[in-house]
Amino acid sequence: MNVHEYQAAGVLANYGIPVNPGRVARTPDEAEAIARDFGGVVVVKAQVHTGGRGKAGGVKLAKTPDEARDAAGHILGMDIRGHIVHKVLVAKGADIASEFYLGVVLDRPNRKVLVMSSAEGGVEIEEVAKTDPEKIVRKLGDPMVGFRSYQGRELGFELGLPADKVNGFAAIASKLYDVYFKEDATLVEINPLILTGDGAWLAIDSKMSFDDSALARHPKIEEMRDIAEENATELEAKKSGISFVKLDGNIGCIVNGAGLAMATMDAVKLHGGEPANFLDVGGGANAAQVAKAFRLVTADPNVKAILINIFGGITRGDEVANGIREALDEVEVKVPIVVRLSGTNAEEGKTILAEGGMTAVSSMDEAAAQVVTSAE
Ligand code: GDP
Ligand code: MN
Image (cartoon, rainbow, N blue to C red; front, top):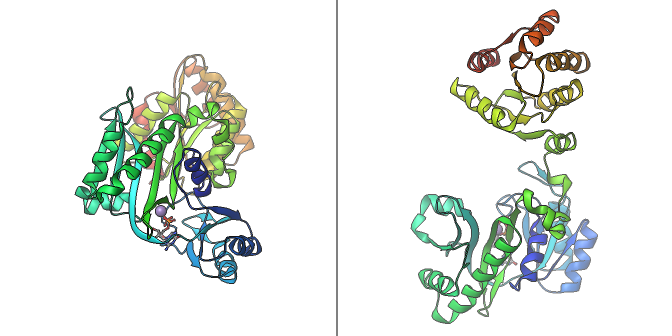
């Protein structure tokens, strides 16, 4: 789960990392009032779950409350890469002397937590990694002993910080590591972390993602969920107990079992196709569940063909076949459907489908080849 910048700033502040004061506005009037309260220069920033807002025109400095009102009027309602801006953060303007990147993320190959930093702050770290990978310095925190303060100091020296700034930097790196670890985050990033004209450290933008499976033990983080930012189809699926992840291809997949759903996507790719989604119908593949799955999959206009891949274990082939036929009475599906049915009562299922004018194959490979051809 992702959170907004202003929420991430609140988390940083709770861990003692200095952030610039700010408040959220939903209208230009509110933005003006906040700017008047703060006095002086403020920055008005779009609150959406995507980065690069600066480049897209979603971050504006305002010298007066009137300018803050205009900036908010301009930014509210903007579409930043498919994210509509409903809120802006009005923060006290920072006097930037230099900008850094500081991030904490899981390093799977090393089975440790990676703390990385760069003096090329403000720009996206993926860009730096591509163009100047040597400008990123890294240290691994051991899951048993954590991230040690000497590692933070080493990072600071490797960044080329003046000696009197190293301890302050190391303290922030340790605190950010704590945020990552204690809040079960999957990514925490400060970009930019700045040195102000007065030589103080300040986090002026941050991004955080949290492990969905751990949210149960972080009710305060869970409360930060912004439904407006989540994929509507994925939310719909969650309500019906269907695991659904939208992807960019054109072959809709409806499968029972998460492992088989992964294997199905591989099979589609092996035959040169691209899956439009991952979908596990979960426990029973009854008519209601299959109908729901059809609705989820066909809501995506990219879908050109659907592959239903069912392996009957506890789920029975005849039940699934009846489910598919009933679901098709209920939902209009305009693209070709390929069914693969195998396992318990598969033959009975095939007969039921045949009575409804549909055919099913037994081999997953054959089904994947067919659906790729149908989509073309
Ligand atoms: P992002 O583009 O979504 O990452 O948004 P940021 O909050 O990181 O803002 C982008 C850039 O705007 C930063 O790298 C800064 O250069 C600039 N910026 C943001 N806040 C301030 C501020 O308070 N004062 C000044 N002078 N520049 C700012
Ligand atoms: Mn940023």
